[in-house]
Amino acid sequence: MLTYLDVTYTGKKVTMAPCPVPAGFPSPAGDDQEEVVDFVSWIVRHEASTFWWRVSGDSLSSIGILDGDWVAIDRTGKARPGRVVLAVHEGQVLIKVLEKRDGRLVLEARSFREYPPIIVREETTIWGVMAGLARKMAIE
Image (cartoon, rainbow, N blue to C red; front, side, top):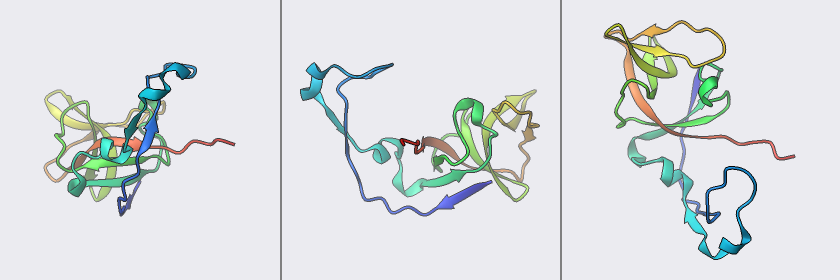
């Protein structure tokens, strides 16, 4: 189950560290090279056609999309096999990976639990493609 959220975007820029960091901390020597990034604009390429949905469930947990995450769904995105899509199937809104199996499109989970694939039918609507996600982590 997904929950739709109407978002008013105000534009908040954050300062980025000067270099990517696989583990540890960036070198203090590069402090003068910081970049400023607006993360929402970085994720949202088409503001008028992008909607944020809250994920409920674990069907995409093995690819890092977790219960409680916020996903940005772009209605103008190209739904291709291998992409995470938001679909309406038999009246339910779902987020799954679109794949092609035996010449047919299917919606598949990516979880450590077993979920059956969902065959995309004529009445199934691929509503949009996931453009990014946001997650808040515990810090205390």
